[in-house]
View 1 (tube, rainbow, N blue to C red):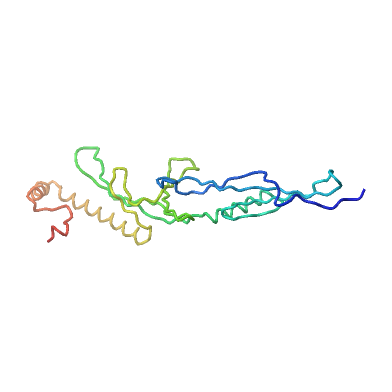
View 2 (cartoon, rainbow, N blue to C red):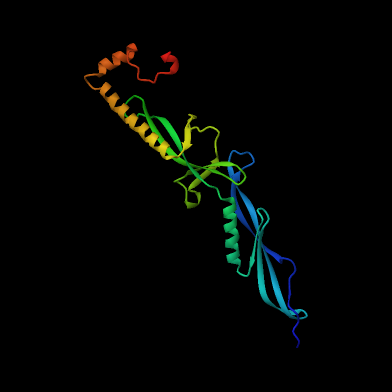
Length: 226
């Protein structure tokens, strides 16, 4: 029986599956983030050989295509093609995260007795810009599972703590980290000085000077200086 000519299915083949690639973006309200689903379409075409309707499939070709961004790869190994396409999408949508520091000055609660306290602390966060130009804040969430260890939200116009107090957020540079360390050391020196003020032999004189306005422990503003 003479062999028929080789033929193949037309175009890029039949759509056999649609996979999804998650991209972090701002929601429409821009008060939260959400995952945008980018479709990855998988097409299959076949090559046939034989006579009439009894043609045998001699090879299968897969085409994996994404419309936006325009990414397309083809081959006979579907797993390998998907890895290449996902790698290209990862590169296209990759967010370069920069290290920043949130600086807190907090009033500390006194659990034993009556008084006031304060603390200076800083927390590392990350700042990133999406391919669409949206600015995001990423912070570590140590209480979630591995899939939710990072909390991503819009970059705020003004940083505030849960009580509404304004915070500073600065780039995490060597200079800034060193300066914050020096700042913390100055507070240690201040704590030692305050301890001297309330030593048994000094405390009554300290309180008298504070009550009379002779001893100012609070920072002096530029207006007060004038």
